[in-house]
Image (cartoon, rainbow, N blue to C red):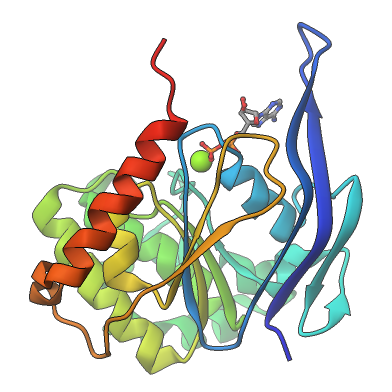
Length: 257
Ligand code: ADP
Ligand code: MG
């Protein structure tokens, strides 16, 4: 059974000032299988984050259905681990207090939630940092707290919105390797937004490409790299050709003004 299924989903925003309607998605369908790592790439402003807000239930589709494991659920936020584009850690909560938030929202007692999260801290390179506040952490650490929060929510499906875009190239590389390691260990299904073609190729089983709005279908690319992967695999000539082609398709979508 699909982990996630979108059936003919349409969505538009009403611009408040101009009263104009922005059609973001128009009859979009796709599915994600359990255990898959799928990336979504597309030009900025093409509706990628909006898609995630629909999947998490922060927005509801105007038409169509969104199903988790074959079931239509209206309150989807409790059923998916979500890491938004901005890390959204609460500055007045410590690392631990931030990490246990989804469990507390599910009604779990503080002590039990802390116990559950404590086991994961070391895995996420955050042991000893439980009592720190977000402003006392590096960018990479804040990302890991945000990711820990998504993982410890207990959901199989994780949707991560450009989690590494603010990191420098070297930190990003170690985070990518670390993410693949966690994906394998925790046996999660991951849907990952990025605007970085190389990142998408390195991480994913499949890449779904957004076009300009309104998006009604996605171009699908299967990544022909075996696992486990090493960063050096990206210098493979077939991969380099795919990268060049994807970048050229994306560039054609972007109109410079
Ligand atoms: P992406 O994540 O691909 O960069 P978004 O999903 O953030 O794109 O945005 C897609 C389009 O929807 C943009 O034109 C954006 O201006 C518009 N949009 C996003 N959020 C809102 C909102 N809350 N109200 C009105 N328009 C919005
Ligand atoms: Mg976005």
